[in-house]
Amino acid sequence: MVVALLLLLLVPLRSLTRAPEAVAPAPARAAAETRSVQLTLVATARPVTFSVTHLGREIWKGEAAGQPVETTLDLPWPAEGVDLGVSATWPGGVTGALKLEATPEGDEPQTRTAWGDGAVEETFTYR
Image (tube, rainbow, N blue to C red; front, side, top):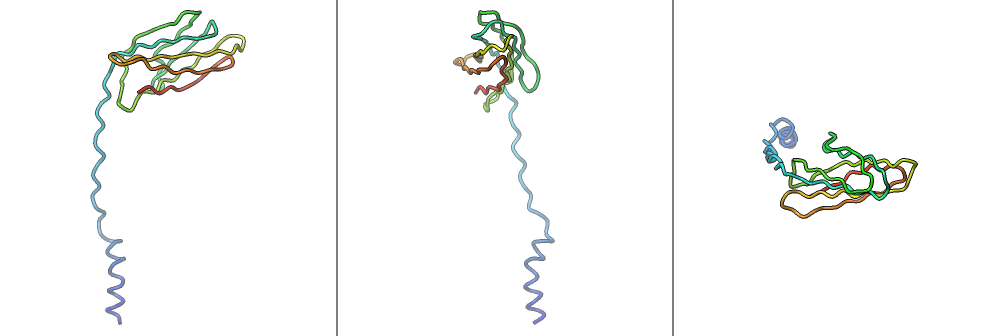
């Protein structure tokens, strides 16, 4: 009887006292390729003050008064995509829209649009 009880306790005790199996580490992510990216901003209401951020860091800011504004930057461009934060303000609470187009070197342009009353803050993902 005692032997049978000890045998029944052997299975749970073994699982509690043995070392856990080694878990393979996650594969290292490859560094994101840096690409030259042309950014073009167009706003419907003028003037507009804008700021573009990447990973919490401001990478471009300015004002636009009717014409599209452009800049070319070198950005890390991983396969998962890039998130760009955009904030813009129009004086007087005017309703406006803005379009931010990103064109990585050798790729097609990708366009994102946002609307707001007096201001807009948006995060756009480009792949």
